[in-house]
Picture 1: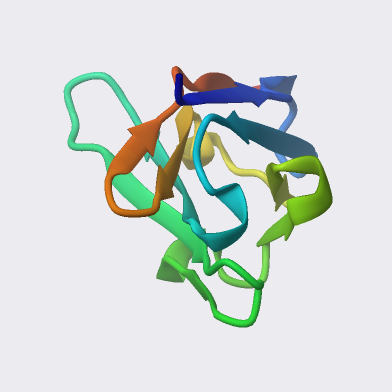
Picture 2 (picture 1 turned 180 degrees about the vertical axis):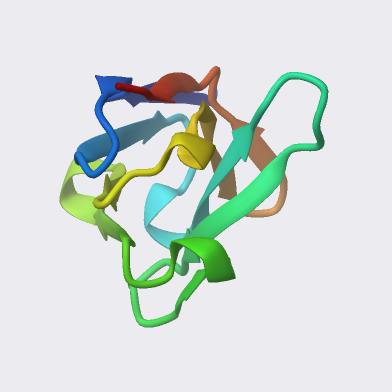
Length: 115
């Protein structure tokens, strides 16, 4: 059974940091492209960042470049999203996606940036 579980979300003040984690099981995590998306109610799901299986290819959406860092630890079947200098517009449900032959989604973790 494929499973992706996100954690690490919460309430943070503008300028603060959070580290999201996504742990996968039931599929070949080491070869999967792992991505983070975010979704705000009423808006389309938005791709944030992606990393390939060995971590050699990393891409970001423009608005998070220099603030967010995606990484992975294949020994732990876990992908991360380090988010620094958070802004109110980063508030969203953050979802993890794994892709290896088929897409797999987690349930998401809420990030709220507010003073």
